[in-house]
Length: 149
Image (cartoon, helix red, strand yellow):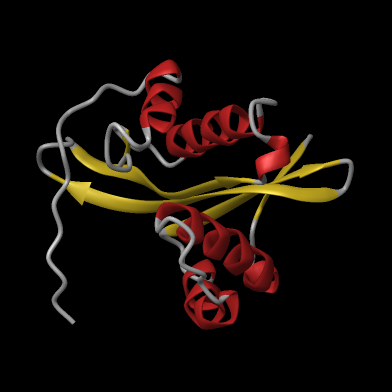
């Protein structure tokens, strides 16, 4: 398996993976990757957004997207996993674990104090929560949002 940092040249591929993730998270409501591609391209061009693609035998099989954040509670600069997707046929084969390990290595190089992730609703996404806990993440409570635009 090969991992590489995604560039804006891979924005269509990254948008396809994120669209597939969102389709799963919404229970099958189709998300058009073409609608995500302009935002994907813009974000992949930023220094504080990192995409890491996983390839198996030359074929793309997964993506992890990281966002650099800052907070006093976190001791300064930290990272957040904003998206993690692995093709269904490649799940339970270590792809996501490799992506998370590379995210941690990226964080160490950037001197992040921690790496956070918002897990989907429980108990519907119990397996996702167990994956993150199995990779050293600790549950610190729910996350809330308010749309402002």
